[in-house]
Image 1 (spheres, one colour):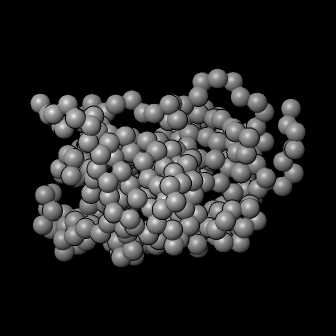
Image 2 (spheres, rainbow, N blue to C red):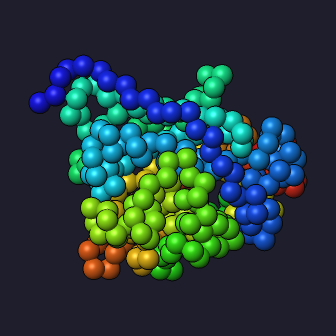
Length: 302
């Protein structure tokens, strides 16, 4: 039993890299392109939210050891976009030593919040934050994601991640390129270092599990051209780690629809499954689409 003392673990300041300038979504650029970001009134092309998850990996290992990569879970609401050149610091607060969950936050140098959420280690993960509780209430008319329906699902394709191969049009960089610029490099992410990991092989960093889950595209009928971004993300390891050069079956399902003043949004649940060992990781993503990015969007929808 641990001491009943609140403990805060704070990581160093890091400068995350922008690696999605060449991203292609539905045949066009994305919000991570400078020109597209400018057209939406953004201060710059934002760094993808999951990039910040790497700053929590050393904290997870400090709190829970290698179990973090086997049964860790991170749930985050992205509060403010970060552009390349800005520095970010990650913190986690637990109520007592030995606890299996912590509140997390990240901020810029001027105190602007970047994200907020929780991290934990299973098997009994706490419930996700209210931001990740899929809405059940009725919503007004939708115009960009109106063809989506709760319960819509797809099976496959199988996915894997090698070190050298790039991850498609959605993620035009390889794991090797990411590890070269990742905020928290580790030998376990590399071919040589992976051989001496606790599992005897290289593992996929937490932030890149999102890439693996979504690299083949979701192919949902979202009206185009339109531009979006991640609002909330949860990556949960049930039977990890996720390994490099391992093939995983995928299943995707739309589990919620919503909207705010500026976005229409949808929740998808993607599962990564090893056909031999079973479910490895469910990935819950809340994606928002900017209303003004879709030509002809009603200014006062009824």
